[in-house]
Length: 278
Image (cartoon, rainbow, N blue to C red; front, side, top):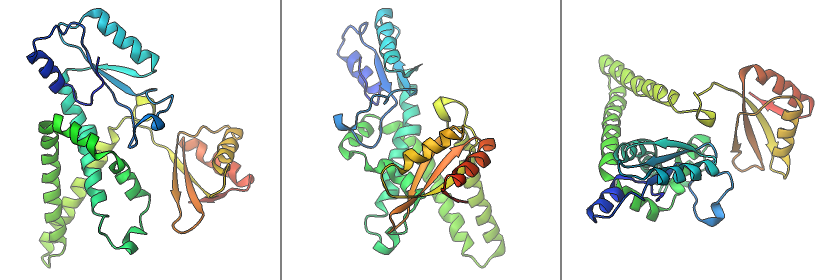
């Protein structure tokens, strides 16, 4: 059993060696973050996350069952795929996003300090995984270059068309400006459509949540107090984001809840002295 991020290459290398592969199965737990190593480990790292298994026709049934048992012990969700289909999939949902994140973050390297100080949650979200280990990603991308290049070619086409649309918006020609607006709107709408397909909590269909924004000070225990107050109000927090205020020891906590629960949570937190922001 292996847990490498790419499956087709290792399988072909083993086949070329003429080994008996009945006792081998490729796997890939789709979990982790931008940091790695034992200090980044967590007990619930694999919980609810897809764990891909890529058995071959000759894989022994007992080997597959043992792999499934391991996945179950880690509380992950088994997904059986063909090795090459897996590599095309991770090129789209993992490897290309890593490169795009790194490319956006690279724009900041030589940017003016005044511009960098304006960084908000949007740039933090986009560049979070750019903190990943370059050496590890060089190995991954070296093992899956073709599928990643195919996805990037599509991104490059969109980038080229978007650049042309933005240039058209600078034109004095009304027809060109109109075409530029349509081009920008097209890529944004396609982005909306793609984002809707990203699975939501626990891999379920994506849900729409209301956001209750709460101003907090940068003191120990503030988050725990908010969660406790939300629990006392009988409201389940579906997701949470924190945006720190630039140059201040304060931040904005965005609590995502079911739409019907938003006014209940807002009222309950106000009663307990929290400052709610719209």
